[in-house]
Image (tube, rainbow, N blue to C red; front, side, top):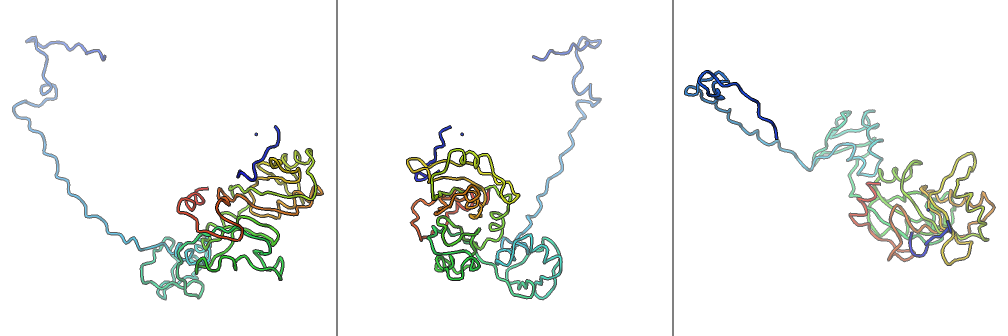
Length: 294
């Protein structure tokens, strides 16, 4: 974990065969053995190999489902469903062929609307208080999209949800496949949160969280939980896979603690290093590769 959330829970030769000589006392030659006369044997000429002309491919062609996904309309999987249902046209013709490739200059209509693929963008924000990912949470709160509006013209969406009181790392992208990947219940990326409670966390409650809790008939497991080094026992570090901050809050509320502050300090290997609160940055190529390989 990062330096400011370092956690400490106090316990984690071959033998040659003997050929019989012939009547003359000499061993038969290889030619004699094979039935060919030495003088008359001529090896059959090998057929001349002719190289096939290389198949010309157009690197600008792109599979139809990927083209649609790149436009931000939906994921590739959902695009396949629309294609099979006859809701996609290329140059005015309905296309239901899976694997169909779009060529440069083709006009693609998806469910009645013209689609143009966008370049994939990945933005990391260190979210401050007072901004939410959904107007449903608080109609008076500002939306996090306002903070990254000048980052790109792409149609960005936040990965996961955050209420206005939660701070820390929030990923934005127009890559619908990645959004879906990181919001699935069984996704495998780890997140680290620093939680400030209204009172010290009892050691027995820390052990209960570490062992897993049943909340609303759902079993909730954490990867690691412990007190934060050199901080009061009300400062807790928790490592968990869910991108839903509400789960983190509910863990402590279930044990009668109030989480007065939740700060996401690590998201799928991304950290807040050199990223002040309220600022954003573009992910590096290597960071994008790492996210896709999780």
